[in-house]
Image (cartoon, rainbow, N blue to C red; front, top):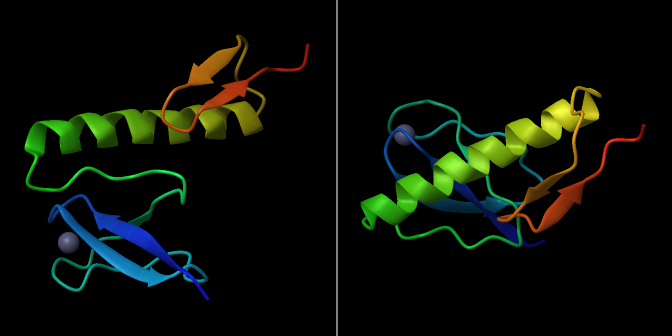
Length: 90
Ligand SMILES: [Zn+2]
């Protein structure tokens, strides 16, 4: 079974875990780690500016996808990180 990258945004840490795990609490701070989409490469945590920019964009794209599935998206949106185009059905 392959592993996925999980990130704790609190501690700025990345960890590899089996992909079957959906959520997992950070061993240091106990907050929920975020499972990263397998296609994405997360910037190194010590590159703070890149890291921050990556997570701001990634969380935005995840929220946008959630809105899309809720039917709350009215316009077509392109998500550059995930390389996905969301087209609401009229
Ligand atoms: Zn943590």
